Amino acid sequence: MMIRIRSRDGLERVTIDNPHATISQLKSQIESQLRVPVQSQTLSANQNLLLSKTPDDWSRFTDMANPHTPISSLNLTHGSMLYLAYEGERTIAGPAVQPAGSFGRKMTMDDLIAKQMRVTRQENPHCELVSFDRDAANAFQHYVNESLAFAVKRGGFMYGTVSPEGKVEVDFIYEPPQQGTEENLLLLRDPDEEKLVDAIAIGLGMRKVGFIFTQTISQDKKDYTMSTAEVLQAAELHSEGDLKEWVTAIVKLEVNEDGAADVHFEAFQMSDMCVRLFKEGWFETDVKDEIDPKLSKMKKDVVVGVKDTREVDNDFFLVVVKIADHQGPLSSSFPIENRIIPVSMNALKDHFNRTKSLSFVKRISDFHLLLLLAKFLDINADVPALAECVLTQSAVPEGYKLLIESMASAS
Image 1 (cartoon, rainbow, N blue to C red):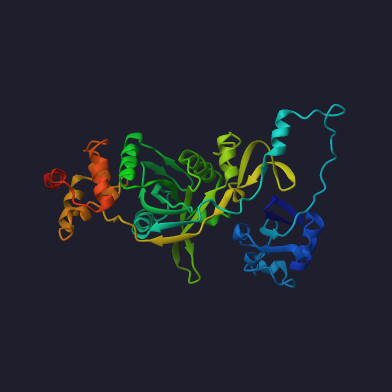
Image 2: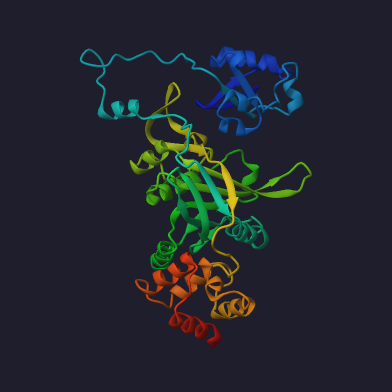
């Protein structure tokens, strides 16, 4: 019987002769075959073990803590996957060493680069914390849950602020044109629309701070945190974002203890090494026929743990970021761009009828409304001026008020 073991060093295999062996006997085989001492091992069927950083965190994974439990009672069969965390280092018997230098095989430049390209887990994110505006986060997840039923993927760019201490606040989410399937998310980006978005953000004292996407119900059955295609897309957008605190957020459905489904947010940073490998072109980017979506393929060998490999466990590239929420300066009640139902001027009329009791500046304090208006205004003068009124919550000049009210009433 073969059991697959995934650890910080990648994917390995352990062979067990007795299918009725206990956890204690399994750990002895891991020590014998993988050189990890029994007393250092924490085993679990839960992949989140590999995202935990300290022995204290590992101790919460107790599903395989009893050494006398037979592995058959855990529904482990040939080819099952387990997760292993351990302290310290280990040595693995490798192939015979070829001498390098003038008396043996010469080291090529590629060999030297690969020896230096060591992929390790990054312990600390540059982003101290990410906090989501409650209305913006709810507007995104509600659409994905209620209208798309988590059947196809959806994504958006997060905008907000970054504090000097590295805290990111997300105050609105812009959803670009896109096509989502069960497994993939194709962004059909509109450069002209993104210029308007950036102009509004600048006027609001904000900037692009990250990317948020959903995982579908079908993906929930697979044992990865992020698929290879998702890692590639996240690394590309992180590289483009050019912000060390850039955050990648995932929204998915998780079944709770009562059997009901809860919407769950997770936040990560792509590691510095991941972004570097992407920028330098190490990733194999053709993943249409990816055999194992948990592993990223490299064009050349890299060093992971104690071995050279071209396959890197995607969890190595993820750095967990703490999540909080807040009530930001904007509302998110206006219809959102690039969804199934296009946003028309009727939406503007309905919005103004619905918000008569608010001050004018409050009525326009919604990014998605500002984006609709920006398509009819001058990007260099009108858009920043209007956004600045929202930022400072100051009176909107009469000319803008008349223009916006006439647009609303004309529909």
